[in-house]
Image 1: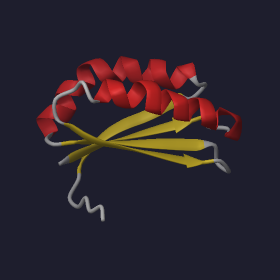
Image 2 (image 1 turned 90 degrees about the horizontal axis):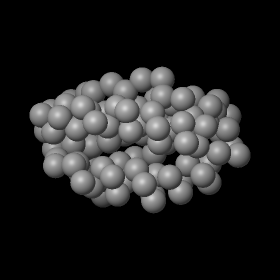
Image 3 (image 1 turned 180 degrees about the vertical axis):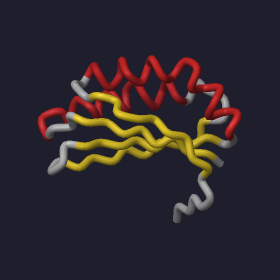
Image 4 (image 1 turned 30 degrees about the vertical axis):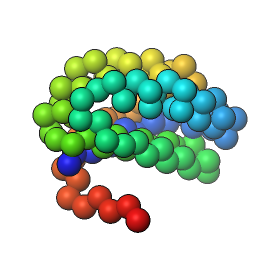
Length: 99
């Protein structure tokens, strides 16, 4: 399994609800259209106004293939709620355990 860790800035508390609507209404449905997508985790820190997203993929190939179109979409989605994408790094997910 592989995970893309997306780091965003500008996540003020006022933007939280708009971001949640975007994630649930647009981002996740879009990601479900990609082969190999297996999960999404959104993280928010109101004190540092930072947000992170973890996109889980069943393989490195699926993660890399999706990035061809997702890179631009990510900037549009984030910008739509006033966030700035700082990075989008791919990692091998050595352990993913969810009870």
